[in-house]
Image 1: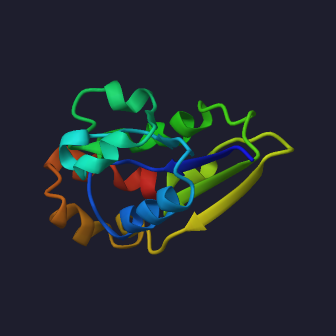
Image 2 (image 1 turned 120 degrees about the vertical axis):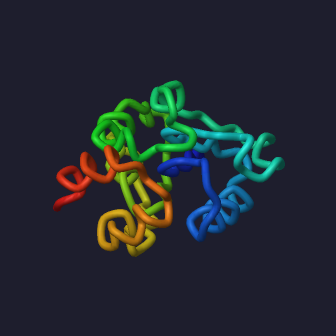
Length: 144
């Protein structure tokens, strides 16, 4: 059975990354698709994993200010091709669950909550030390 893992971004450590560690331990041969990967900010042993970042990974400032590209994330995850996989497991609380799979592929959504940058935006913006421009631009994109 061919399995793929999907994770929003890999540039900071939190609870979602603990879950990702467990998923990789269960499925060590599975590649990890992600919008961006900053190896210098993640555990060194992750460099042994098959990590496949998308185009956002190559954009300026993405590794430290992924919030700048929130409007692009849905499109970015739709660009990955999962047609050769039997099972795809998406793990996080946000954009990676919007992947597109074929009709024969089982998509398991491991949805973590809460999506702090949506539900507690002021606290998130403060903690992440978002600049004034980012704080102004993001809120319209975070309304659901």
